[in-house]
Length: 139
Image (cartoon, rainbow, N blue to C red; front, side):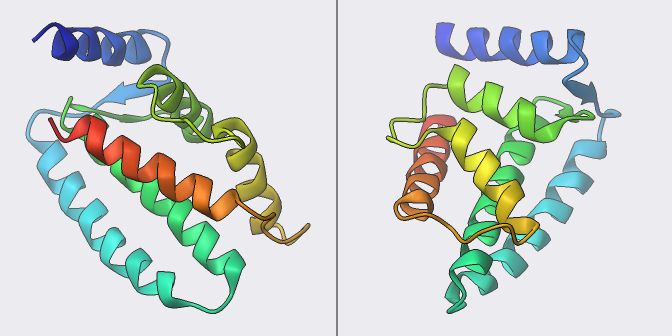
């Protein structure tokens, strides 16, 4: 119970700092349905032979999962979703990787702009963070 109260207070602090914005009552259900549809599409990309596509899809899956968690608290990402993602991952303590979420976000931006490919271990680190986030927030 205390853990959930701390999460509620954390989410409220994200709204106060404008890192997240409130969702109209009842609207969160519609938004979660949209996110679930996106997840189906993104999961279909995980079978790609292109490592960059798989990394970007995995990163987007994490973003959708975090957004769905936020929506269950009647909020969604604000103007800087990647910065907010980093804050949430750090706060929930689901990053036990050697690379770290800060670097994984940077890799995502560089990969999306085709600056370079995904470095060794980055995809696995992102997958571990995603799995840890899902486990931590499923309770």
